Amino acid sequence: MADSSSSPSQSFVTKHWEGYKDFWCERFSFLNNYSKFVKRDKPLPPWSDSDVEAFIALDPVNGPALKTAREAVNFGLTGSVIGAVSTAGFAWKYSRSLHGAGLSFLAGGVFGWTFGQEVANHWLQLYRFDALAAQTKFLEWWQEKNERRS
Image: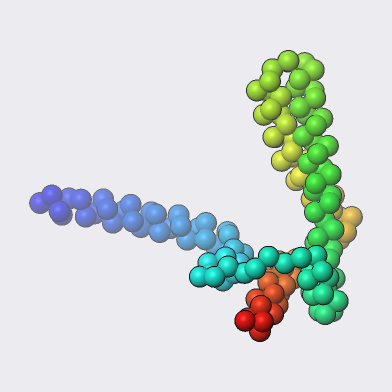
């Protein structure tokens, strides 16, 4: 009897969990593009800026998109620094609380990064590119290049 009473409850939980998992897997389906590069027995070796520049010069379609996506990082970093320092400065000025200034520093960095990425999206017109596809093509190129070396 104990088995029959726990079975419907367990079935409900399993069904609920599967639905929840499917919901989030659908939202983060772009991570499947990277799984073949991350879940490897032997990790890919690190690449240098010259390797990235070689790919940019080699691929006329994905090269410019990758170059633009790499330039967008500077906007995010700038926004992160400005956001972190300014919010921590205000928090320290008005509260003199070390933990409050620290939390403001972290939150300001995250908000600044997000704002910087939005500025980059419009300034560099990233909405015209598929940066994810360009990054995936670069990783495929890097994987093939290293397999040929081996």
